[in-house]
Image (tube, rainbow, N blue to C red):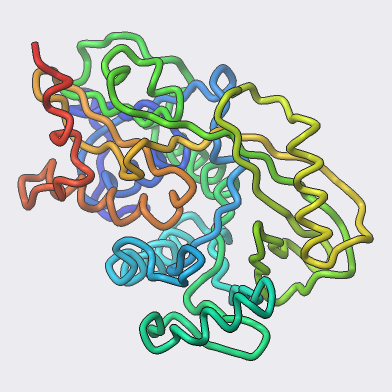
Length: 334
């Protein structure tokens, strides 16, 4: 339990939504001793957290570039998740090597010719491909589930939909892709993307690392894996789609997996944004805030920016402008 945290009757903050973003923000509120409640209506509004691939990876793109804010994110990420596992007495943080094989000989030649310009500490080159250091995955579903149990024990969680309430000084919305339906945030440039992945059983993939090749195969147990993920922008129901499942099967074949048993499918909608940067901050004219828009990199981005948001709330420092909703101040004109 967070040392010194007290449950108060009149709380200055309400967090709406207990997906991965709301959950991690809530843990930072607890660490900062900020009294709050957290409400969630997940039986009504499905979230992407339970269908997330959960991979954290400091390298992105075909040029093997360091991801945005790689050093800052990955300096904080392992410590945060390790401490949170200890607090919750659960296992959900899984550091694991990630291997990116060269797609073909031409790509290997193209990258090796540019190795001097693109090489950095996160890469380990081999003749077959590149190993990515400091990668791994977070089981977001377990993290969210055990956190809810923990919040219930503290008496700060309610399973309910948000309705206007005067019992709180400020309300922070962590609604995932549903945020675009909230009139407060409807003008923000969301770009949600539906994704599907498959849980399967096989003895073909390696259980020792994540394989990344136009998709990923991630080991869950000795012989269970998940493959992902797909991207769709026109339909956001929780139902799986035939074309996405066909795409996942093709991904498996391209990664050398042709003998497997499909166990289940997970479907979610990533809360992505048009400029690929989160929406964080307090509304300029209302006592409400938003913590949203982390897209497919939520497990990497959310801890770092939850800490930054809390520090802004405490008056210790301002959020970077590129993630603050102040960059859209023209959309909130009274």
